[in-house]
Amino acid sequence: MISLGIETSCDDTGVAIVEDGRKILANVLSSQIDIHRLFGGVVPEIASREHLSNFLPVLDTVLEESGLSLEDIDLIGATRGPGLIGALLVGLTAGRSLSLATGIPFVGVNHLQGHICANYLTHPQLKPPFVALIVSGGHSYLLHVTDYLDYSLYGKTRDDAAGEAFDKVARAMGLPYPGGPVIDRLAKEGEETYKLPRVLLEENSYDFSFSGLKTAVLNELNRSKQMGEEIRKADLARSFQQAVVDVLVEKTYRLAEELGERTIVLAGGVSANSALKEAMVQRGGEEYKIYAPTPKLSTDNGAMIASAAYFTHLKGGRPQVFADPNLGLG
Ligand code: KG4
Ligand code: ZN
Image (cartoon, rainbow, N blue to C red; front, top):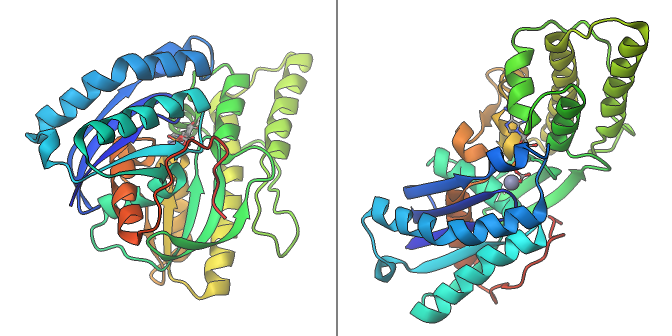
């Protein structure tokens, strides 16, 4: 089955064509980062307008690159949430209109499930069950995935998502948007010389909280300014990143141990983080298998939506076709 996936939940217009949920035939992304960087973050109204003008050229490119035409497509899927409502509506309406005009079936896709599916594209042998850690710009989730689209929710963010913390800390340090990749690079040149908190919450909780860590960094920046001390940016980036990574690794392994699960899957933009992947692999040793998407598939893209559309369609049931900006997991 050939599925066409459309992703417009935030600031990337992604369209892709995927075979049987696993094999990418073409994957095109039009990033708006350069525009939003001028404002230090995503401006929702600008994002919607950009999706509107980018969608058709991106669709044309994806068809051209795959050598296919619309007649070859068996299924259309578009992200229906979570995300920015105006941005979601552009992709969802485009997908539904294409479906109405061609008769190709349509399914709305949960963006977070798409992030997990990025792993099915990267690792053809990967199958549930596994423990999944989804860490993106707006969400942090810890799940036990029991089948392609079935899961139990164990933990989520109580305040800032992991990626949000990276972006806010970067902004406070005067680094460009999005902050995650910049901190990742900068941290490689630094040492962990700043003492920052690891917030693990209650002993039996799998939830995350990163706002205290973010505040600790802001306090350090203010203190240094008042004392006239220069901030060692690479060291601060390294110390902050290590604090996030320690919490993510600790909670993920606690859940894996509790469930007796030896496969761990990382997903979402922050799963591109090199220190996170390294630390996860190191903690697991020989006993655990750690999977993450390629960096290109970690962040938002159309291919993960095309894959999730395929699994959503396979599962059957009435397709969900309305936008839900607050759609979550669980
Ligand atoms: O999944 P994603 O593309 O969009 C959402 O669904 O939110 O994630 C974007 C987030 C941003 O917060 C970005 O700073 C973060 O992922 N990110 C990273 C890295 N690459 C992207 N965070 C840490 N290290 C990275 N290498
Ligand atoms: Zn995302």
